[in-house]
Image: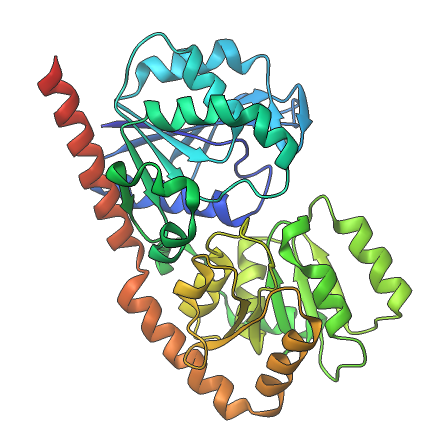
Length: 376
């Protein structure tokens, strides 16, 4: 079965949680018999437009411009049609308004679904302009997948489409991550130390990293921030203005170094303060490695992964004081941190293994194809 995934960015261009979700869905369903292609855009026009990455065919249309975090490619208006026609199921990942337009321009009906990763929060005035296109798109797809019961329960938009919403929590696979050698771990420790708080992700406005920097002033521990993105320069300027000596910005790192840093950390810190953060794959990666978690309550899937007082701490969004209090607790009480990390790993094994996610999507793909054929 040929599955076409559609999202605005993908590896190796960017290193974010949503990209990892798509990779995990592709890996899991490929094991079950899927042939996966990802259609995306790229700023890197010096490399081939079609590459293979971890057994996934990645078709990349050159980006023409970006507006309000929406990548637009005029070339994609033509190149998308070819990969669309080859697919048995088209799997969109929301939000990417340009994908709604691509869907509108296709001439034939295909079995389709969209994984609804997040509401659109920030661009309220653009949302008014976009609303008719979005409603047309969500009405046209056969099924809508929400990634957690928490997010479904708190999304006003999803309740409008309640009859065709499925909940499939995100899962990741240990085997898809590199095994870090003792030498690699020792090298990472020599550079970054151990027992630090770790953030991994694209540096975007809703990640709350500006709040985290305020929180760690004069803290006796270090924070390591992995990733790059639109707010990187502003965050480094803020750190300099605050005189912080206990924060390290690593930029993009290899998967091996990311795993090593997770293993060396005291806990995963995830200060996102808006509902744009719908799940938090880094929280899963930390839980998979037995690390306690610190996140905020924004009514999304982050609180499906991290249970307050059990697997870590869930604090009020936007509060530097609350973040600091949770981090202090884990720093001062290593036994509590270890116990929470163990519970986080147990919860991961029970609910978030990639096999569960892949099987649910595979069944959904078959159901969509079967219904499509019965209508012919």
